[in-house]
Image (tube, rainbow, N blue to C red; front, side, top):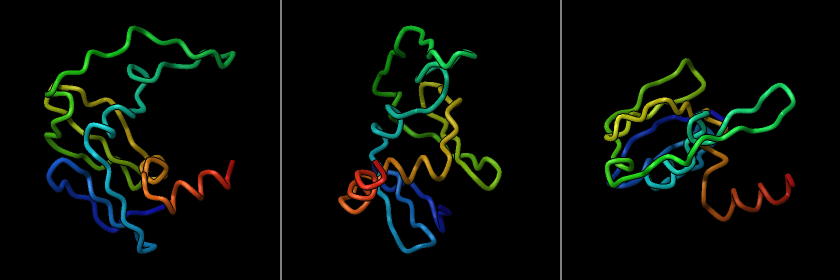
Length: 110
């Protein structure tokens, strides 16, 4: 999955993919799905996920300041509350797409 264009439009992140698909992710949902170890926990060598206390989210937590490219495979959002450790791979972003077409594809993949 490779995006052609990524931009913020209001309270959403709009992604236009090379295959013609478009994804619109609400910024709040994007932040709530932050894949970093601080937000999602971190697996140990046995695969057990260790989590600290859940992050405290405020209105600033959902305000996007900027987006940095990470190589040719991901983006790293910077949020107004200072959080910036989440690296969202393009395939992860596509998996978050809320549209019916993507939801059906996820169900079929099992």
